[in-house]
Length: 104
Image 1 (cartoon, rainbow, N blue to C red):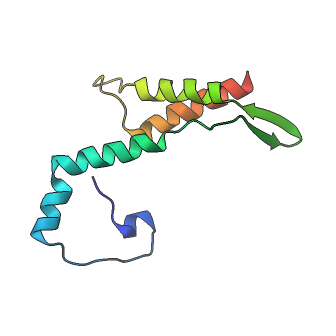
Image 2: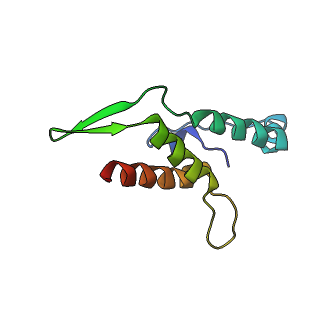
Image 3: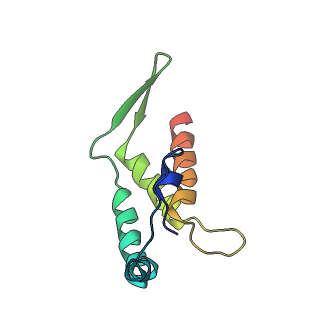
């Protein structure tokens, strides 16, 4: 599902008619493939470890930790259907894995 500017930035009203050709392109399987690749390209592991300081305590977010969390998120499935989780839902899995590792 594609988002509108208004749904991305609440309060912004961007409306206009869409041509039938644009609707066909956006609804086609090629668009789904292009969006899937674009999202997959966002899933990058940092090139170097990152230090995060919280209330005087330094936490180290390592490339290994991020790689493992990414793999866990990419393999997580919906408990009802068994299907792989979509990117935005799998982000929670990534976040939880990173937080778990940082706490350890």
